[in-house]
Image (cartoon, rainbow over all chains, first blue to last red; front, side, top):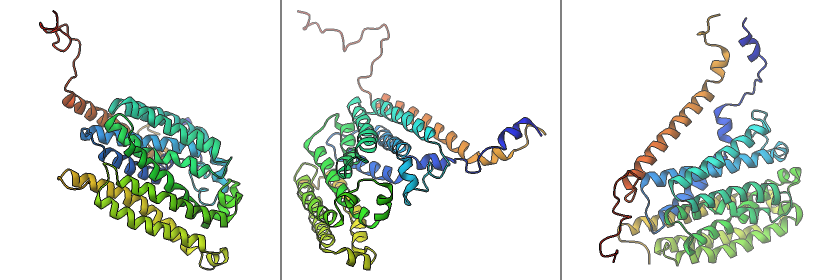
Length: 313
Length: 64
């Protein structure tokens, strides 16, 4: 046998595949980033050539993926403990921490430079700040320090529509800030609903989720409060230049239902929730995904109608 | 053993290598298409070519 064979026979059976490196980029989070950034770009008053728009969205998504890889690198100790994350490439032993760090840093640099070249340097700087915010402010600092981790860290996930808007306009405006606020205020009730029925995971990982530090009844109350605070933000967005009757009708229905969901969660006792395996909490969590998708979908519909001389106020 | 024979490592890493190759090819295609798009939509794109450029020369009226 040759030396070549001898050198390769010691490789681990769990060798990383391309899909493992892709999984480091958190594809499901990337899909939210792609969608909201795309809407931010499409509703902006200034158009961009299709290829520029496509490239911008691609590299905004890649920047989001890079911050996901940095998050998985730093949080690998937590991921090993939590059932939900124990199958991720690092805790499963298929990818090393060093590889994830390297991938995250290189893709961060690539995505920022490419966005600057494709669109403008304001949008690129915004993307760089978003990666920094998610990887450093949220992952390294807030996540293990305060139960407000989800609230403030949620800003990182709320920036993409602002970046999409900045790609087209080169700046910030009240519309893009409201799109940010919509996602920002939506994040806490979305994640706390998840935390209510994934209790054991966050407990075991010692992550200071609100359910652990302030108790579950308090978390239920905060979900209701945030759904109430979210409603005026969603309605206010509809009163700006990107809103219109279609968005407003959708926003009113969706916010009534989300507040109702928050109220149902607040009213329930732990015993009742355990008795039906957190049926209401799971329902509200699933609805929260639909809530955000339909709000941004309605904004997109308004932009589409506007191009036909319809939509808007 | 001839060097051309497919080793187990070739099979094991085929997916990974193919993924990297397609990613790199995609990146090249994006840079090329983005460049073409920029040039076609450039409008004011103008390089230094040792020739008089109307955009930086003053009109007769301005010089007075």
